[in-house]
Image 1: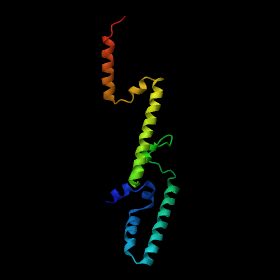
Image 2 (image 1 turned 120 degrees about the horizontal axis):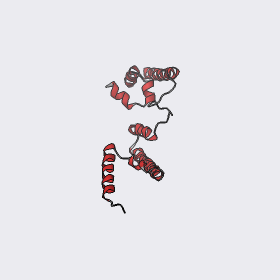
Image 3 (image 1 turned 90 degrees about the vertical axis):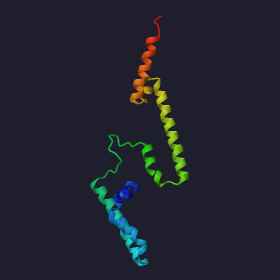
Image 4 (image 1 turned 135 degrees about the vertical axis):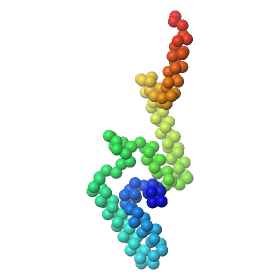
Length: 144
């Protein structure tokens, strides 16, 4: 149950909230008003302490270890989808489609310089099928 809850939280909230803080936050609405205020402030202070401790021991929070530190924008857009309204989801879908078209356009521009670039877009099975068909056509053409 806790694992499912933590998967929904953004990475920074996973760092900030241990399971005891999540339980504490769930209890706050059931407390009397003065206790709610104290517990809410304690929870927020604990979150800040957890975040500061994390960055002092491990200064880099990244979704994956990469040599360049570059994470695709599409990965970030996918991660924020569960926090978006329907209108924002539609905008994200349009943005994702635009990014895919731009990427395809870039591949097509590079295809003139490297004809094998387009073949690399195929799955390995499709590449084998393409090479088989290509060799069949090459064998059928009589030498002039």
